[in-house]
Image (tube, rainbow, N blue to C red; front, side, top):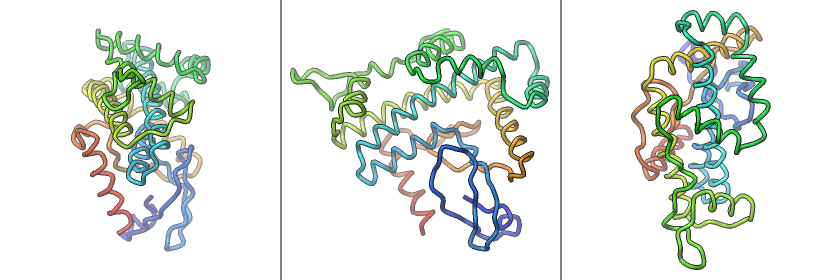
Length: 263
């Protein structure tokens, strides 16, 4: 992460921190400046990058867990954006922004509703399916039902991604690298496709920007510096359509990013 005081006078000020569940990071940079910085990346971006880095380091079990978590948190991200879009009704982007910021939170009805499903991934999945149908008129790709080439049962029949994920996470199955790369690629392609559809709609991007402004304003009220957004292979912001196109390119991108940080 970058120290805002060093950055203001064009010094390096780069500080390495452990990833954590909160988006607020207390930094002490090499110059001794103490600041609190908000990491503005969405959680699914960080989880997917974490899974890719685990593959590079040979932690294959942990990689599957990270990819599965990234998929679930992406569905939550999609649900929140589309739900807020419909809760906004016919308001313009500016009107909706004013209402959200004046309230100090994204949406009380949305938060209360989310509490009913936040511990139940299957209900979240159902909400995602129907919101995608309402948003696009089409069901999304049922990624969990895709059959894997590299993961087969005793009868040599290809098994579904969901079965692979459950075997690893719940049964302690130790996957091979080809299996993990295939699973990671399916998750990557699914998120990339749905994310591209989401960001192609200007109203949706306005909602995402409003949520970011809300988080920035709340952080500044608590004395924290404005947020920073680090490059990820699945960026959730407009104008981020480039980047890796498949999982092999994901691994190359993450390897190069790691070299830049540590060199």
